[in-house]
Image 1 (spheres, rainbow, N blue to C red):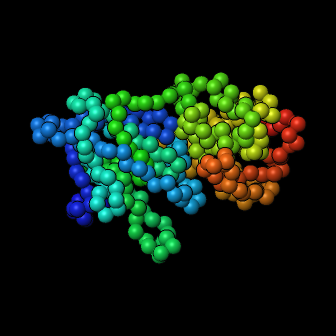
Image 2 (cartoon, rainbow, N blue to C red):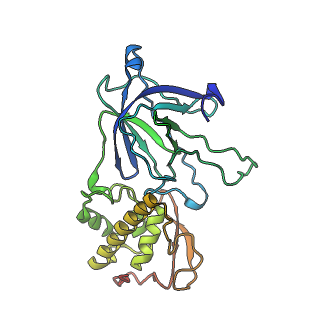
Image 3 (cartoon, rainbow, N blue to C red):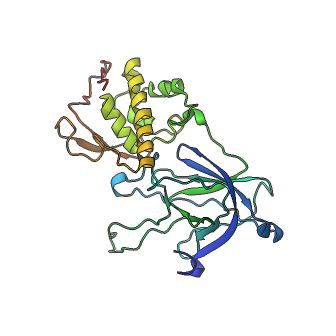
Length: 308
């Protein structure tokens, strides 16, 4: 997948990654051009690269732990950036930087299906409708002096002078604002919509949504305004606990155990239902739930979900 394979499809620049930050579904890399790049007056900064918007089968990639392996610290290494260009219509890295020679942050937004692979490339698991078995093409590849590399897929990229984030909405941040999350969940709309709202639950993906709702015993279409304060608290607890455990499992190389996501039966042996839910005019996400463990109560009855 390097320039040796098809030189016309890739654009190469070099530079220096001095630090990084992670906030929800966004990764920020501070990138400084090396001396050779500076002397030539070139700037390896990209125009935004739009990620693919088609939903992949199985909803495989999610916010927390969407990468296949632990991301090693890229600090203090000089990477070579390799970006596909040409044939697939992607814009390659290039153009003037809005920040001049000041520090510049490359923002990578993973969205619904973005992922980053460490020291390996994504391989196709099945043929598409046309019978094509070609491997996915990364949006960006960072090669480091140490010999390792990062390959980014299905993401959006842009440059900024500093990370633009709201850590109080990041479900794994120490600054996560629980009160703000609870207030958002209490709105008069289905909680499965609110949980995926990145303004209040940055980093929360569809797997986390399904698992947290099941473990809290809440039907996905329950109106937040009808849930008791205790039930809202329990739901947020499950969101944070499941997310933290999933991330820790990624670091340790262990598989996260799912209770409801993509299951035909729940742990209690009940038949699981599956349907796509989403706000009117918004994106519809596949949702799994158990009608017995997550009953849909009459609209005039507050829910009394399980506290497991």
